[in-house]
Length: 263
Image (cartoon, rainbow, N blue to C red; front, side):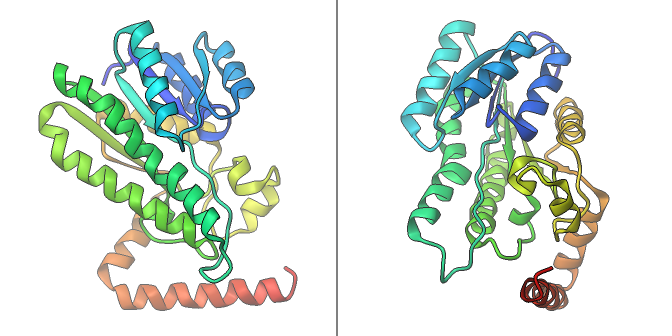
């Protein structure tokens, strides 16, 4: 995909990967609409890049529909929709409240479904369009101590794969961003030392990830990994699932031991 003049919408654009990607897309000449529940943050990022900031609660299909209709009314089309907004809470299967499950289901997965339902008809009508989805390596492998996040991100992976298979030959391109650790508020809570000591793997800055997204979209590549070790871990899982599960169990034991020691 060429960037100059393209209309691109990014959800979760007020901070982290979303904000960094908004800046990177704008630098390439795209017209960027920054959407976020945090309207002030969205507009602040948009002001930096001569874009438009819009409040959107992606957990509500009506909000996503309103966002899409507003952008289409202003610009006539949406060339790329980046479903990036996400939430995480941590939690075990036994102590995670159903309300937490429902929230993460809506934000982490159904928001992607709502976006596709809203933008895909027009894209199919003209025979081109681009869908980008932020999952996580938690959605390809898993993540310790955060079951709702792992499960919902697995759903995003499945959705993106299905879209790529079903609509690629109809002119619709799909990319799946599956980062390891990224130094954003979701991972660190503002404390990069936590990120560096976590089991998230090598930690990248949001700006580095944004450049990877730009490169992948230009090349129309499906899977965007943020570190070579991710491919190694994927290969180990697919090559010998039983061994991989054993290694993950051992890592779980180390995490639990460290937690008990207050490390």
